[in-house]
Length: 110
Length: 121
Image (cartoon, rainbow over all chains, first blue to last red; front, top):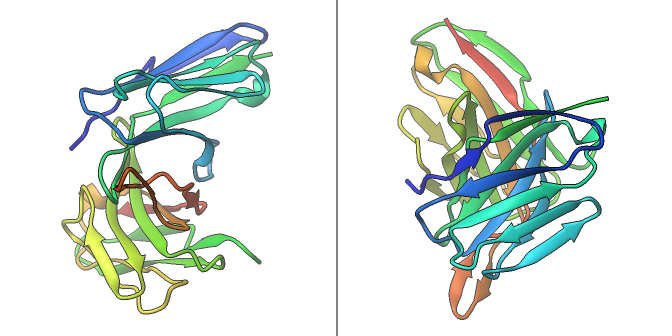
């Protein structure tokens, strides 16, 4: 099992604040995805990063893949209540398996 | 309606009973997956299928059986339900894999169904 650890597990912040969520592993991944999940629904893909050191921006969200392809971070600028949800990272280690992290539950307070 | 659907959305059963969870997708995606989601464990892969009649085990396959006679359907059966199988089950599909430098990658977007909340008493 290729373990992906996310931190923090829970995060509660005020609207307008910035935050960073981390996804770490001792394993190397060929690619890494970030998903957001809202209550009662399945996860929805936010981004895929493939190259070590890659940085992708999606409006106020910035995703980075570590140089060694073992870790990733998600930074949200000026968080809004609509950002509330469970954020999951998922690493592709081999040909077919996708390993999910334990998730970070974010609450943005208006 | 287009998309990926799961049924039932909620199920309560008793220990020892057989339960089948259904998953249907309308995109003709080649890959389909079953995950379970539990507090503290995130999403764990149970089984996946690369195409009709091709299935393979994931991280936690024990106690589960899958089949895929048609591309659009991927049912998951608990042959004899146990309390430890109480969980939320998600089905997902994707269009397939890509390659980079000759190595297969598995990064195509996975589309998830709404989930089935299963309680085993």
